[in-house]
Image (cartoon, rainbow, N blue to C red; front, side, top):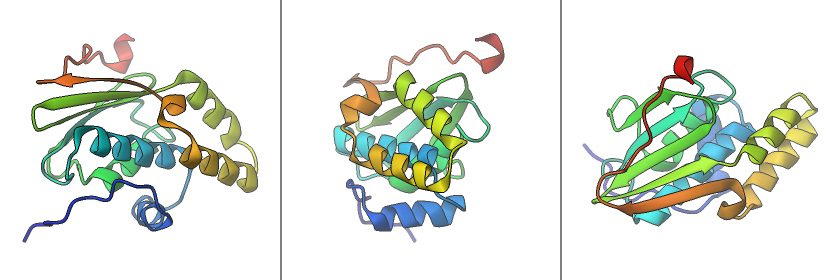
Length: 162
């Protein structure tokens, strides 16, 4: 049995609730993952689930790795299906391929700095930041590159060598 419907490409409270249920709690890194995944689906005109592959570059530990659960929820790419791979490296970046095209989304350093600065504050400030991340234009969140063919991915440099 296989899912035949396309993944939704718009942020919604229902999507956020699915991500919270999957991840166990809400947070700004999870929201970033949702936004990364939704942006990739739109840019690649992908149905998600099976016609998309993701290679994520990030620190393989919370809170950075919380991005992965947002990406998985938004796109249907999963570690179990082997259409998602993680390369440990500083920063947060994801590269998606689908139907002979690719897109790379790198979370802007200033966004990551603001998120990390806000995490130690109260729940109201964190929720406010999550709402800001949902409402932000993609250009304010990500540096984007894309093209035809296979991704011209950067070297898969492990974190220990960065």
